[in-house]
Image (cartoon, rainbow, N blue to C red):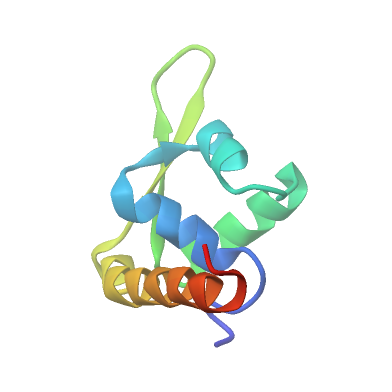
Amino acid sequence: MDVIGGRWKISIVACLCFRDMRYSELLREVEGISGKVLSRELKDLEMNKLINRKILDTKPIAVEYSLTPYGETLKELTLTIADWGMNHRKEIIGK
């Protein structure tokens, strides 16, 4: 739980399950996260070998993040948690 625990890591991994994303895209997609916290969480995920950080040769320089093959092993877990969340929402509020 230390590796993927916390408020934001699963959301970041879930976004990267579908496609590689730039920092600014992740900042928009992960609702409520600040830039400072996103940077810290991305560094933690990279340190734990769950994501890759690639510097793109563009002007201005952009950074793109993707899941590593090891990080890909979290896809099934992430989808299971998302399904549970949808079912829980239906149970609690009927939507």
